[in-house]
Image (cartoon, rainbow, N blue to C red; front, side, top):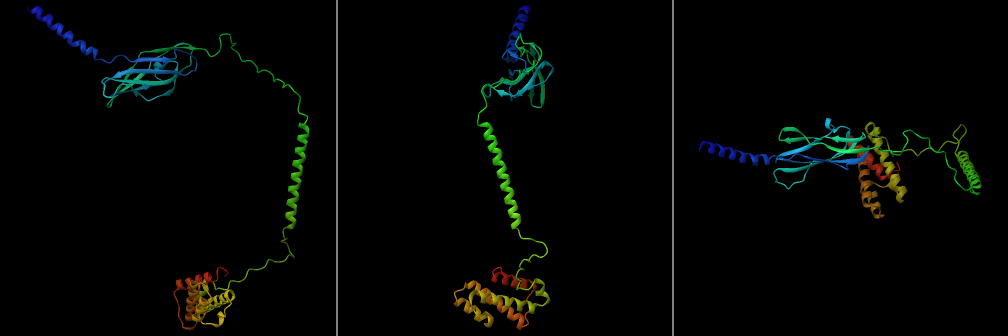
Length: 301
């Protein structure tokens, strides 16, 4: 009875181990395409493997198992199985090239990340047959370049006349440019001794800024005189003989812009108050009055 019970226990234990062994992930599949290429040609390396959910792989290039292969381009890992499938199927691809003749083998190494843990997984090897770039009967030495070959046919009969005409035209253009430069230099006015001086600019009828503080009475008298003379010249009015109020009324009656008439009348009243009534405006107000006078004169001052 006891031997039968022991045999039953062994069978049950073996049955329990069978699903556990089947649950293990299969070995990664590695392929290099094409399987035959010349030295330096680009080949496609593909690694397909299955990992439990929550783990992700990454191909580690240039490890010892790469042998004579070199990495050209590495693509990001790609999940090829449906989302939620456990285990998940991943595909790693890279472009490689071999630089040695004969059958070359590549053993890729894959880094598997699970949370903060990283483990290295060595995949099965893959091989490719690397052929020479030269034909079998090609000499293994450099040969000189062939000599230049003559181009059949004679030169065009119009080539020499065309070149001569182009040279003559270039010389003519150069002489014309030089003549133009000489003419402009001769027409430029002389600047040495004995030449006529340039006409001087008209003096500014308005006083400088410093005069407003040093002698406000004289400065405002000059401002009033300049404004009255400008209005008389522009509109044909006896501005110098009219009071500020009269001049403003005459300007409005003559159809002058009412804004200009008000500005001129107000400024002249300010000048009369400084010259005749002992009014002394602040320095900022004096500068503003001078700027207003320049605006009335239209930028001529």
